[in-house]
Every structure is written in structure tokens, then in C-alpha cells.
Amino acid sequence: MSDGFILDARLAGDTLVVGDLPLTRVLLMRDARYPWLVLVPRKAGRIEVSDLDADDQARLWQEVSLAGAALRAVAPCEKLNIGALGNIVRQLHVHVVARNAGDAAWPGPVWGLGQAEAYPPGEAERWIDALSEALGL
Image (cartoon, rainbow, N blue to C red; front, side):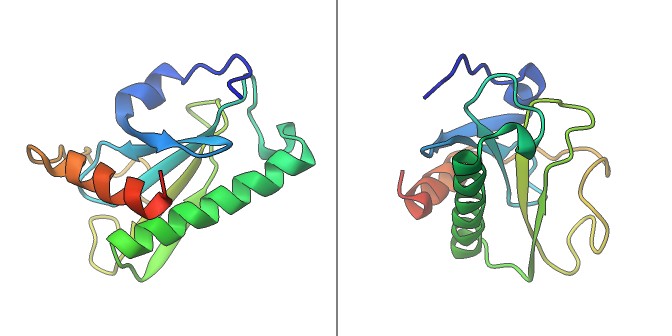
């Protein structure tokens, strides 16, 4: 299913791999301030959701919903923020962020606010394991 897929270097540097769903690679942002997943369709050259065929568009939103449910299971939250911005990284990707009143950016968006905070030793691995299980990977 790779279709010549290569993960954008910036996404690779900003994230850790959780695993692969049928369409997307699921990534955990390297920012301990927020439970934050990024889903990247494993299709080369896609920039916009409309660059996917109808079946892949439907699958993408199914996987976004699954990611949201996994985040809620692992990190209960008041609100899920979902966005496909692509202004800096052109490769099609969808952010799914668990938000709570009082988090570092609340009520504004998480993008571009402050510096990412590293996970304490072993913590990212615990998140990956829990999210992987919740996603059925």
C-alpha cells in the first residue's frame, strides 16, 4: 500500500511512530504538553484530502475517528481538535489533538505556541504502547 510513500523529514523529526492502519501511518507528536496524533496517508504526492480517491477519503475519516477514540480512551479529554493544515509540511497529514481546559494553549490552537516539551524517559513508549493497543495495532 506504500504507493512510493516516504514520510516528510519534518514529520519524521517531530514524531514517533505508533504504527500503521490500513491507509495511514499513525504518529505521536514529540510534545508532552498534549496527547497528539498525526495520521499520514501512505500515498505519495498527496497534499489535500481531495487528492485521495473517494474510498481513501472515506477510509481517512474512519481512521481519524478511530484515532480520536483511541486518544479519548488513553487520555480522556473535553475536546478533540482535528486539522489538516499543511501550510508548512505539504505532505497530507491530519492532526488529532486531545484538549482540556487549562492545557498550555487552551482555548487557542496548539500550532505554533511555545516550544514542544520532551517526554520524560520512558513516557513516550508508554503512550505508544497504550495508543497502539487502543488502535488495535
